[in-house]
Structure formats: C-alpha cells, structure tokens
Amino acid sequence: MAGAILYAEPEAVFHTKFENAGGPEQMAMYQEMSEAGTHMLVAAIKASGSLFLASARGGRLVCASKNSMGSIYSDAGHYTLVRHFQLAHPAAWRAKYDRFVRFLQDNNLSVGCELVTGCFGDHAAHPATEHLVVTAVLDRRSLAPLSPLMLILLQEEFGLVIPGMFFFRSLAAFQEVYARFRWDVNAEFSSIASALAAQAWRVVDMPYVALHSENLEGLVVSWVPAAPLLSAAAATSA
Image (cartoon, rainbow, N blue to C red; front, top):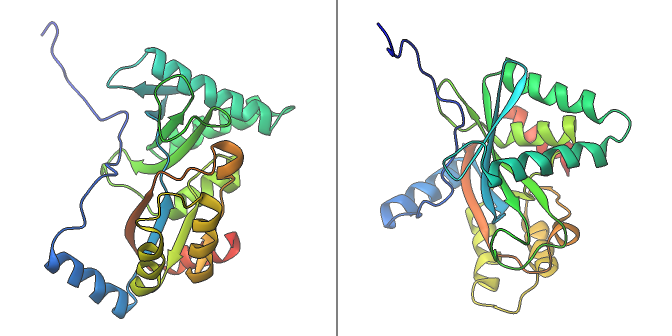
C-alpha cells in the first residue's frame, strides 16, 4: 500500500519539569516517604534555556528543538554539544563524540537538555558562556525518565554538564533552607548552594557561576527511590 506507515517509534523524548507539588494529601505522601527512608529528595539547579533533545539512529545524532528538527535551535544545540567535546577532549573529541552517539543508540536513550545562550532569549540572566545542560535521560521504549544515576554517569563518562544536585534524606532539612531563601530576592547562588550543601546528605557539584552567573532562577525538586547504586554514585560524587 503506497504511503502506508508500517512502523513508528518515538525519537526524541523529553521529561516535563513543571509539576506542582499538589495539595495536603500529596505533601503528606512526601512526608511519609521521607520518614520511611524509601525515597530521597533531590534538589537540582534549574537550567533555563531552549529545550534541546538528542537521540541516536544509524550511528548519527538526531537533534530536535522547538518541536522541529533542522531548525536554528536544534542546529545551535548540536553545535554547542560538539564544541563541548572539542574543548573538553581536544585531541580525542571525535572519538568521545562517536562513543556518546553509540551509547545513546545502543541503550535506546534520549537526552533532554537546556541550551543556555545569550541570544535565544533572556533566561534569568545572560550566561557567562553558551553551554548545554543535560537535565534528563529517558528510555525511548518506556518513555520513562531514568534515575539521576544516569546523569552522573554521563558526567563521569563524557564530561557533560549536568545540573548541580543536592540529595536529602530528610524533607525537613530541605524545607529549612528553602524557607530561609524563598523570599530573599537578593540571595546569590553561592550563598544558596552553600546552605543547601550544609544540610544535604550528598552533593553533585556544578560550575554554575563560571557557566552562568550568581543569579539562580530556581530549583527543580523530585523524589527518587533510595536505590543502593544511587547512594554509591552520590557518595563518590560528593
């Protein structure tokens, strides 16, 4: 049959980052998870830019942004990613890049990133340098986001920039810092990060000031299962 679609599968998958915490019932559930120790609260530095998605097929990176491929946004995201590999691995950048593409393809993964630039919109404050932050890794088969463990793996294996993350075993410990800075419009990143680190169980660092500024737009908070592998990865990243 001419023009028939015989097979289709998702290519670039993204993880929604805005979801309200909910009402009293939801907050009570969070408190129960905290007390039971079954989950960890992860407060990640919010990167605000243009959404950039990447997967791999046929040995090539497939890039998408702004609901399209081959646009100025997807091309700029790919260029920024390539420049990262060139700067981080000067002599062997192509081998590292090709290995990254194979990693995405072999594991059916899609990465969601924020392309932070000074020319595609005023996001919080103009960054000190154009950069790409990998904020989520998703399974293209289940469409489910993977553990922050995968972000840590990408950072270790490929030197990719991921959000700074603060792991809390106690909801109250995070809430104490959050309440202190919630309405302080003059608070700078360094002060907030230091206060979070002092209360957190583990910290995965990020060169936020060097990449961006002292202007912190916000935090993305999520609950993740307290798996042994995650605990080990967070411990070695501290």
